[in-house]
Length: 252
Image 1 (cartoon, rainbow, N blue to C red):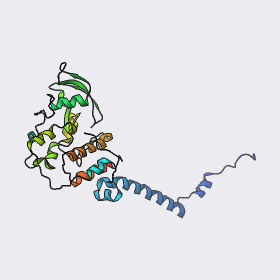
Image 2: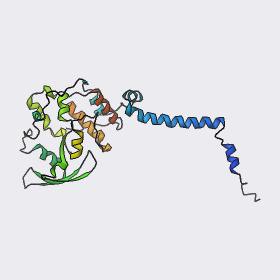
Image 3: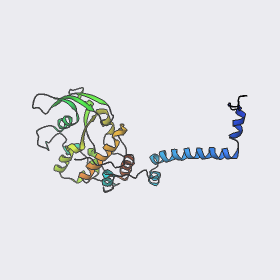
Image 4: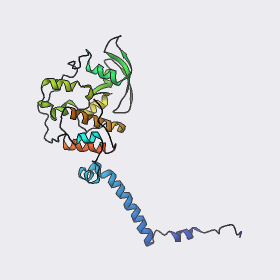
């Protein structure tokens, strides 16, 4: 045998070095299994058990969005009694006085490659939307069968606003809220319909990359109008903000 070659060692040699039936090896295997289970539970349990999320820090967050959320009043006795969508006068009043429909104002702001009905017109007839809720690109064309592909969403839904304080407002303030560009987004029509009037406790955009901005804007709107949140809503918002440290409230 060459002095420079290592002698061949059979697999039996290695089985003697690591024997899964040995006491030390069994302990190591149990430690690995316990670690995997611990990591899995730590990631999943906060999502299904609110109390566990609080214990594991799943509802801790930093940034102005989290700070603002923690200042909002929590009210778990909200009611939709008396709600009337028309009381917010969406698109029925020109609150900013520019002579344009609120829908067209938002389309002009949120779409790219915007084309108008004619020079000097407010009416948007086409454009491209990078939809924040789904991440899809939508080619918008105004028309009886096509306009609904892009809808204008109230980030804080009107019914949610009603339940969280708007039911006590004078008509002028409800009209302002219903047409406030800060609370309006051009979005994918089906996604908007799916959301309905749900709060963050029950609906979030399927585009996970936008969830932090979405929740932060809801918080900004609720702070601007001094609206309340439910405890479930607050927990859901904190769980989202936990994933994006330092998240800021968007500027109005």
